[in-house]
Image (cartoon, rainbow, N blue to C red; front, top):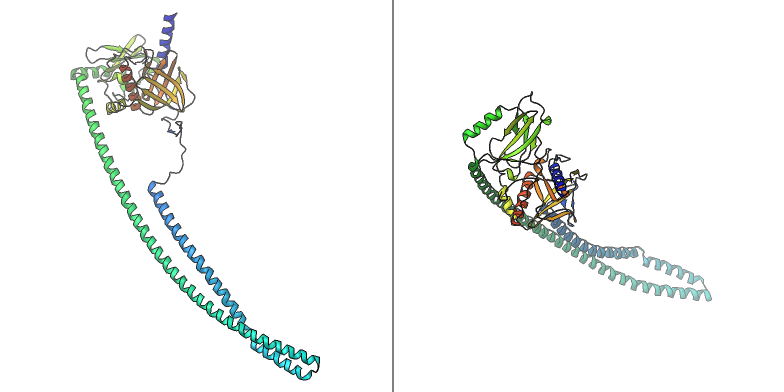
Length: 462
């Protein structure tokens, strides 16, 4: 029963690794991570203003606010004084309109005429009225003197306030001129800072670009050196080309890590490839040792790191006839991948954004983002704060490229966490997929574990 169970689990792993992998929108979805470690898809909206625009706008608003407040306070004070002076002046003018002396004289004339015609008690009353009018005249004269004095004081106050208002306007104009000078100076300083920042940024980019170019040149030289070590003789290469020319099918695609190889017919009369039986092999350059690639039975195959430096060969069975086609040379390494992996090896753990395609061979309905963690001791798959799987490196763990078709075959890998639990994951790029496999295999090798695909026979030193 144990042997049957193991065989059944191994067959399931082989079946899962041959599935086709496709993106729903023909590209890796665009996501970003929030502060609470939950990855979401960002909404498309208007672009935020740059830091330079925000600083300039806030500086102008601050200076204008200060200027407005100063002018407003001065204007309120002097307008209040001018209104008071105008009110007092109008009141004084209104009081001057009435000719008090004329009225008093007319009243005295009337009373004197009445006095000549009155006798007895009435005459006494008229005389009393005349004395009252005389007293009123005296009081009015005193009041008039006070009003004249008040008028002169109001005029003096009005002159003073007018002069103060003019002085205030001069002060405001001077403050405005100073503020304009300060604003222009601030703008000039900001322009100098921005220019210096751009120059520094350009120098930094040029320096980084030169470093990348130098690193890429070293990688290309290393790749050429490795290719020369495994390069077959011209006679052998020509022999393989002649063999492929005589076949009904040929391989299409770059013979390098990160690409996909497709079996296509050379002639229209060739049988449909979907009706044929296919098996892919790795061929060692020395000795032509053939190594079967388990699960690679489709017309499409995406090379993985194990294939670098080796030939790839596909056997096509048409009934009783067998056709063999192979790459013209060993699979080349991807440029810059080695230095990228070496940099990741210095970290304790590296995270890769992935899309979960299948779980235990069943298609995963959600196209949401997940995070694939490759650590020194274990591998973890999570979504936000939820951990879907976490396992230390062990002999039951398997990791390899997906050996089926689809538009994401070169970006997908198969990960068997343990017996009974496996995932198919699609990465953002071929480079990240291959880097994740190389990184995990290196960490597993440090733990005396060889990470490979189902029934793979790759040596631990690969």
